[in-house]
Image 1 (tube, rainbow, N blue to C red):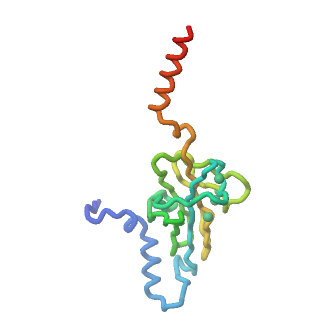
Image 2 (image 1 turned 90 degrees about the vertical axis):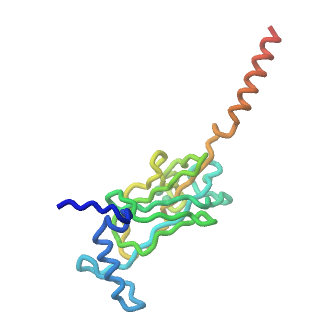
Image 3 (image 1 turned 45 degrees about the vertical axis):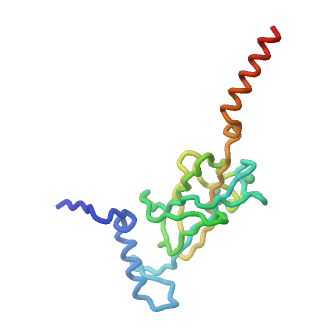
Amino acid sequence: MLHIDRQGGDDALDSDADTTTGQTALTTLTSGENDVTWDGGLFDYASLGDYVWEDLNADGIQDVGEPGLANVTVNLLDGSGNVVDSTLTDGLGNYLFSDLIPGQYEVEFELLTGYVFSPLNIGGDPLLDSDANLLTGRTGLLTLASGQIDLSWDAGMTVPAAAIPEPATLGLLGAALLALRKRRR
Ligand SMILES: [Ca+2]
Ligand SMILES: [Ca+2]
Ligand SMILES: [Ca+2]
Ligand SMILES: [Ca+2]
């Protein structure tokens, strides 16, 4: 029989029974233990982060002097594309999802108003590049191993050059140029 739950509405809580099982197991551990049993095996929780920055020169690389961006919404998706957690970058542009069961995830960065994403996967260093798809803001599926702390999932945002001149200013400038041309004829 179909059951439609109209209460709660928190997909993150009800979408993954395995997650619930894993977290229930954790509550039975004595303090100091970090391994939990899941699907018959042992694992350590994994973490995922960690940075959104303003890519001032729009080259897709985290350069010295480029600041972090605060209050950027970062969503954590499971391997099926469901949002399982969400957070904001702190004052330094950092974010972190911790206590994660090893497996497949995807990170989704929400673009700040007036910005575009930096070009992704530029240069050879995954710790210094941007990983957000220019259209979706998503990293693509990534895999976390047991105990892994992967801080290589970052996003650069930049104010597009074309957006810097005010349209109204351009209009006035255009009108002035037209007037000049007419006077010269
Ligand atoms: Ca840069
Ligand atoms: Ca990358
Ligand atoms: Ca990266
Ligand atoms: Ca990083």
